[in-house]
Figure 1 (tube, rainbow, N blue to C red):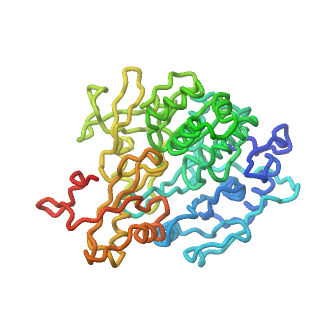
Figure 2: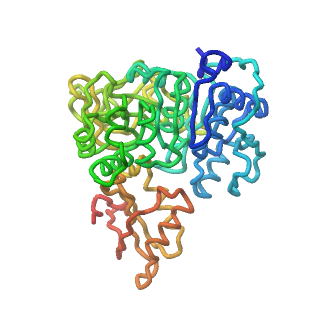
Figure 3: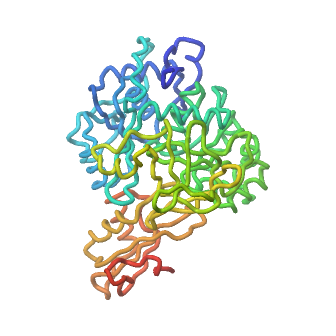
Amino acid sequence: MPLLPALQDPTGSAGAREAVRFDETSLSYARLAAAADALAAELPAPGPVAVWALPTAHTVVAVVAALRAGVPAVPLNPKTGARELAHVVADSAPAAVLAAAGETLPPALAGLPRINVSTTAGDAVRPAPPEPSPESPALVVYTSGTTGPPKGAVLPRRAIAASLDALEDAWQWTGDDVLVHALPLFHVHGLILGILGPLRRGGSVRHLGRFSTEGVARELNDGGTMLFGVPTMYHRLAEALADPAGPEGLTKALAGARLLVSGSAALPVHDHERIAAATGRRVIERYGMTETLMNTGVRADGAPRPGTVGAPLRGVELRLVEEDGTPLDDPSAIGEIQVRGPNLFTGYLNRPDATAAALTADGWFRTGDMATLDPDGYVRIVGRKATDLIKSGGYKIGAGEIENALLDHPGVREAAVTGEPDPDLGERVVAWVVPADPAAPPPADELAAHVAAQLSPHKRPRTVRYLDALPRNDLGKIMKRSLHG
């Protein structure tokens, strides 16, 4: 089966159906196929190609063109700071960058040949290109760089198909569904689930461009059947539901949706309950990673259970292990999640050492997430094996790279970064700074802007606290557990 079967015969019954909509730009399957195939003919083989992944129809055309041509695509976060972007470009070595005409690209991309992306390509119909091998790389998606520079996870077509088909089974996802979301298009949640998911089913996706409770109400009340979001979005929906001045029709919109799905971080139970009380609908959760795509999910016909991410999806093996890798005898005890199945990546680009460290000899992926199992197999994630992962606004953020960026500021002598609970973001980034000049510490907003410029805006500290010294143990390691507000 082709990865995107509805595009194989755009002149057939599905051709006139709306595939994607971004504000005023709507592409039918026939128009998407024409635009993507025209672009695919320009792509340098064997690639890869970088995609300037703004939340627009141009990004969809670019990614679909790469998939049709069998050329790996590297989605680039347009908000990435100069240092991080330079690393991704050097590591992935794209043969070209794909972007809409008129978009200004940063200096890190100046040395790459540019291919402009158009959403209009006339009505020319080209024969469907041959389907690449299931094991051929489809995307190279960069991780958040928790323990160092971001690593490129190579995702084969096989993994994308396996995950999306498992979600079809779990969520009863069909071509009649209309998905609404406002997720970024440079990572798994927004691009693979939120764009390729509907396209594989022959359904439709309406992207809001920028999240708003008004946009959610409008699109769900106009035929949308599914909503994908991160906890921050659902928190804002819960707040709007409780606000008498909230968007008109929001309660009706959420109550009428077939499926409300939250992912990328745990949705607080309080927000689960507020949404359910106001709408009668329960938000369901799922669990995945860049390297594994989707591992578990609450089924559409299953029991929503706040605090859990459901049972393993079809085809996914999941186990909990002790610190030494021995499988747990008691599934109710806390252990590290390991997964195995067709949903796994093929490895980290240019990093055989990291790939070997991530996988056991018999093919289990070490997720680093700690969990327990309910008697019926539902997974309850309790946290990271490491202490330096911050989940904020749906993003997984590594403390180490923020610390390095802070230490580049001339006004910072020492720095540590932690996460603290935040009712809107889930967690907020907190910087603990020992200033170079205690009498004149650098302002908090200056430090936040410095980090945003070096890395990405969502990685900036939301709170900065100043110390005379960081707490350290006898070996000089910072004792982060001693840091608290």
